[in-house]
Length: 379
Length: 258
Image (tube, rainbow over all chains, first blue to last red; front, side, top):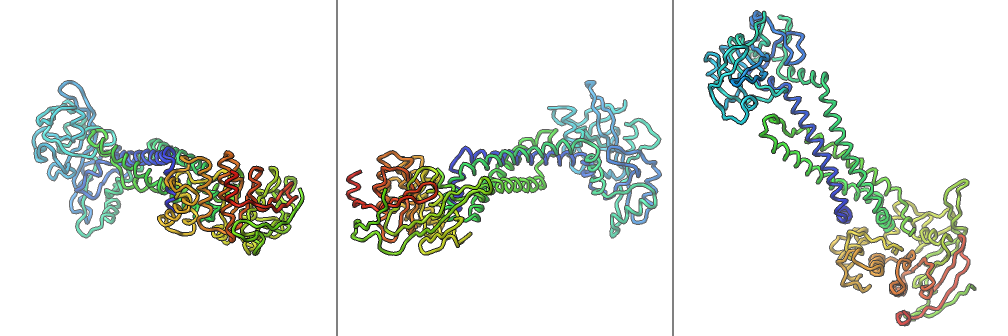
C-alpha cells in the first residue's frame, strides 16, 4: 500500500508542493532564528571563549557578566598566586575606550591589556604581524572584523595610528577573534600600555587569569581561591554560562527570538496542517473506498503517516539546505561572522518538524479513521 | 406489480434458482440516531440473492436501498435481523474479521467510480490485489489482463481524468472483479453515465452475473436498465414491497438491443 500512499500524495503537484513548502519554510525560519539566537548569545561571551590559555577567571564577587566588571586592586593578583594549587596567575584588563582615527572619526573599542610578561589571554591566530610586536612602544593589535569596521574596504596596513584617550597607539598586527556582542573592534595591548590608554582609576585590573597545578581539579581550586580571597573564581565554562544567563534573563533577546521561532512553528504547523487536512478531506471518498474494499484503519493510518513523513523529510531537508545556504552566503560578511547553523538547531528543529507532522497526520487521520466506509454508497 | 417467482433459462443452460443463496436477509432493521431524532431506515426486510443472478434493488430516494446494500456488503451493522452472506452471518462478525471478509468476498462498484486519481487504470484495478498482499508488479500485470476483458486494454496507462465516465466505470468494474469476489454490489452504476455508456456498463455486469459462483446486486432507480436483472426487488419506506423474477435475454440479444 506504500506506493499507493505515495502516488496519492504526489498525484496533486500543487498540494504536494504546498505541503513541502510549509515544512521547508518552517524549518528555514526556525533553524535560522535558533542558530542566529545561539550565535548572538555566544557572542556575548566570545571573549571568554577566545581566551583558551587560562582555566580560571577570578573577579569581584559581584560580577554578573563580562562587560560589567569592577576593577580589583593589584594586590589581589598576589593573593591569588598565594592560593595553594595555583600554578600561575596573570592580570587582565578589559574595558572600553574611544579611538579617534586619523580622519577625525572615532569608534568605541574594546581594549584588552595583557600581562606584560606572559601575554596570557592574547589572540591565538594572527593574520598580519606577530604577537611579539606588542612589546613595541604604543603597540596594539586589532581583530579582523574591527579593522574592517574602522577602515572599511582598505587592505591590512601595519603602522596605522589611532588616538586612545589622547595617546598615540600604533597598529602592529591584525588577528582573528570571535565577534563580540556589540560588534565593537577588539584591541589588544600590554597591561602596562593599557594603563596609559584608559582614564586613570584607583584600580584597573579587571580579572586575574589563573591556571591550576597538574592534578589539582579546577573546581576545587576555584573553591580554594574563593575561600581564601573572598573573590569570585569561575571556570571558563561557568563564566561563559554566567554571562549568557545574564543576557537571557535581563534582555528581551530571548523573548524576541522566541516569538519568531514560535511563529515559525505555528506558521509551519498551520500551513502544513491545513493543507494536509484539506488533502485528506478531498481524498475522503477514496479512503472510504479503500476501507470498503478491505483496508484496515491501521493500514490507512500507516499510509497517512508515510505521506506525512515523506513530506516532513523532504521539507525539512530543503529547509536545512536553505539555512545552510544562507549561512554559507553570509559567512564572509563581517557583522554576520560567527553565526552558523548549530547542531542543536539542526536537531531541535528536526524534533519540532517531527512534532508538526505527527500533529498534522493525527488530525488528518482522525477524520479518516472515524469514517464509515458506507459513505462510498452516498452519491 | 405482482410478485412472481419464475425460473427461466439463461445463457449457458443453467437455471437461476440452482444452488444455495448467496445473500439471505431475514427481518433486517436499521435505525439511525436516537431519541427524537431516531429514524427507521429498514423495517424488517427479507431478501434473497442467488449466485448466477443479477438482483436489482429499485425504489425512490430514501426508501432504504442504499442502507440495505451497505448492510449486505458489510459496511453497516444492522440494528436487528439476520444477514447471511455467502454462508457467513455478517451480523455476528465484527472488526477485523468483517474487513477481511469484505476484502476476500465482495467487489464494489460505486456511482462515482471512486478511482484514485493519481493511479493509472491498471494500478486502480490492481488495488484489491495489493490490499490482499500481492506485489505491485504482479497485481498490475493481472489488472491489465482484466482491463483487456472489459475492452480497456489500450487504456491501461491512462489516468481517470483521461477516461470518459463509461470507461472509468469499466475500470471500476475491473477493480471490483480482479480478486474474483463471489458477491458484487453495485450502487447506481449507471447514474453518472449517458444512456449509451450506461447500456455498455450493464451489459458488462450482465456478463459478470453469468458466472454461476457469483451473485450481483445492483441498486438503481434507472428504469432503462431494469431489463438486465433476473430479479427486481422494489423497496419503499424501508420495506420490500414487490419482488419480481423476470426473463433475461441472452447477452448477445442484449448487445443487439443496445
